[in-house]
Image 1 (cartoon, rainbow, N blue to C red):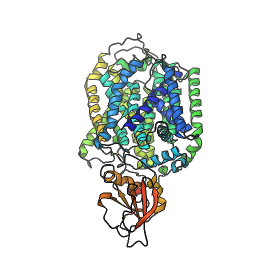
Image 2 (cartoon, rainbow, N blue to C red):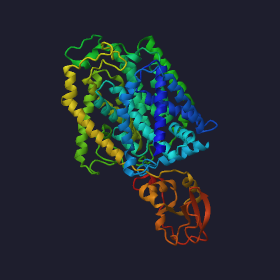
Image 3 (tube, one colour):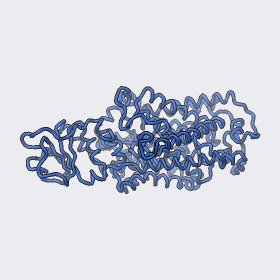
Image 4 (cartoon, rainbow, N blue to C red):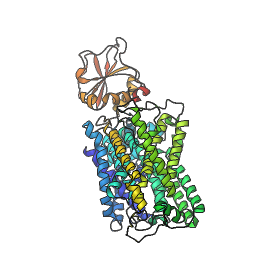
Length: 640
């Protein structure tokens, strides 16, 4: 527990300090909630750039610690709105931390997240263990993005935090940083509404479900895509950003960080969003009427009519875009060769099985946030709730999404509209030309943007011209530091049928997310690559693994062992049930190193592999093997 929360605190603290200092260097002195995501993107990039230097993870740890200290020193006395940000952020961070802790509370112990859902964490732990040791791994050779792994390696060598606790802490930190980043869109809302909206945008149902299976890469990518959209939004709608020469640099750095988390596929969402956003801004700058006034059309129409020129037009806009592109190019250039290697990765093969740990294609309605199932892979009607409940929830959320899209279009929320259109396009491509596994990931990345689009109309209940920077948003002027009372139409939108519908959505979607968190399985409390190292020795021979009873009963140990020894014939039994004679047909027995004597009379020690021992049968192997062949697909499957 201490290691997990220490890792989460270290990641959150470094991300917030480094991200905010970077934003300050771009010219924004007031606290920005883009700092969590921006800081995490920079952590992954810096960690990967230094983890392979002499000293391995220790060098990364020292450099990250130094950057954090320098960032904190730079911000001291220069940061505006720090206490206000603390008062706003704590009510979001603490419930997010509680939700992220729910799996450990339900299971009663800390360990590898998602072992019963998805065995992929084994590969990440092995790759990170090799990074710590300074040796190669299969993921490293294949060009797999290892920015998050480098961060965990820095936690291991710098703070002495175990690899399991490091990954758990990183995953918990992501669950805290995502809702904090979503505060950018709801800064002017009343406290309770702001907190609820930020939590749900940061932790919608599919993000909570991927958290439950330990999928840290996907949750980071969903956060970075959301933050990229919000960074573009800030550059066009926040008066503290609009005229800055470096206003697009935060978005560029977030995009560069995505490469170190998700390699080139991450740029599909960000590049598509940037392209559509740019086209929309240029089109609106050319064709939108400059006439202002609030009239009877409400605040939304006033925003549309009174919007200032697009931040991408004119010489200043072109220079700002050029600077951002240069920053992005410099940031991703060192990873270019590995990005080319990664295109051969097996996940991208459309002719492969493509299911991973899924039962089949996921319903796209899951991205809407209302899916009353603890397991996101379950089809409507196959869980505790009848199918009708799923479809009613999907219809309700779809109506809110269409309403939100319409509202965003009228308000010229070009970045949000561009993000949703891109996410829909990526999902369509993955569904038609990819595998169910990649299509599911596309839905997970889209989920925060969809939830943001549903909830963004909440801002109509407050004066959208009031900004945290004390200026005008989208060209609606007001007196600095003074809020105008919302219009009658705005109050109706917040408290009338639309507001009640959004409030109901908040309650139901939050319950679905919490259900996903509570259903997360927790695996072993520690990790060793020793079992994977035994695979060449046992090959396809029959092997009996005698595992501690607690590992099998409480820590999803059978699935973990099956995955580690995949490719051979493996039987798994608790130590307490082992008899006096080994089963016929078994050649090898694996025990924990606590057993210093042979588990059976006719076995001798073949090889120690701390914390395990490999025993081999003397003489011949009588009889046929009673152990099943554990193929990779079988070990990955939920019932395997």
